[in-house]
Length: 89
Image (cartoon, rainbow, N blue to C red; front, side):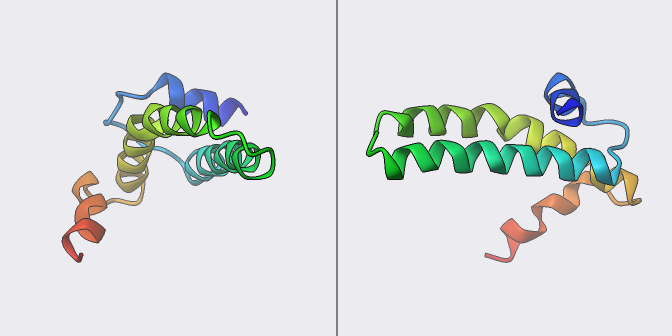
């Protein structure tokens, strides 16, 4: 959980490096939180959680990009490499 909070605290830090554990622990916790919210939407038929899921997704968008850029720096690449999947569409 400390890795997740560390990424959230560094949400505008696009310089530096993010180790493999930091990146993957943030991804894991973020995915689990999204799944839990989706579980409530599907199994309890609570569509009001859809707003919460959208707000959560928007809330972690910038930290996700920042940790991705820092991870690319750690492997010796530019952060612009994150745009390659968008270009191939």
